[in-house]
Structure formats: structure tokens, C-alpha cells
Amino acid sequence: MTDWNPADLAAIDGDGELRVAAHRPDGSLRTPRIVWHVVVDGALYLRSVRGSEGAWYRGVQRTGTGVIDAGGVRTEVTFTRDDAHDDAVDRAYHAKYGDGSAVRSITSPTATSTTLRVDPR
Image (cartoon, rainbow, N blue to C red; front, side, top):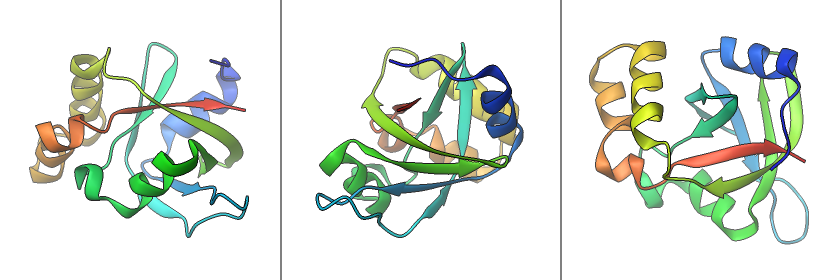
């Protein structure tokens, strides 16, 4: 795991949406998708609201690497499955995005099963 530059992480966290594009096996990038993201204890987390059926999530699973773009920060990253902080990630989603139906979806068991920690490369 590589630590984020605090200014970059703050800029990413301050943005409401993040674009994520997984690398294909040939190194090219898949089409970017907009996802919600949160920061917990200095780490960036993403989930697929569609669970393992989400297209961007399936792409990430193939290579484990890609690019994110949020808050004026565009960087190469690695994706690692991380369920050790699911309760804190749930709380962070509620704190950042509220308690509406979309947050209930991103904190559902289906989405929680896809929690990824995102680290800069």
C-alpha cells in the first residue's frame, strides 16, 4: 500500500463523484465510469452499487489497476478488496452523501461485498 499525498486525497475526497477506468490486459483503459467514493482513516474506498455485476467493477477485478480522476487529481492506482473497514465505510457514505435510497444501495450487502481500497501507484 502506498500512502496518498494529503493534498491530493483531500481534493479527491472533496469531490462528490469520481471517475474510474480499469486497465485492460493490453494496458489500454476501459471507458471511465462515475462512482461515489469515501475516505476512511487516510484511505480511499469505492464500491459498486451493482455489486459484482457492475461493469467497472468486473474490469477492475481483471487487472487490479486503473486510473481515477476526481478533485482535479488524475492518477494511476491499484485496487485491493478490503472488507476490514466496511462499517466505517458505511458511516462515511452516510456522512458524505446522506441517507437517501442511493446511499442505502451503496451500503447494501450487495455493494458492501465489493469494497475496494484504492492506492496510488
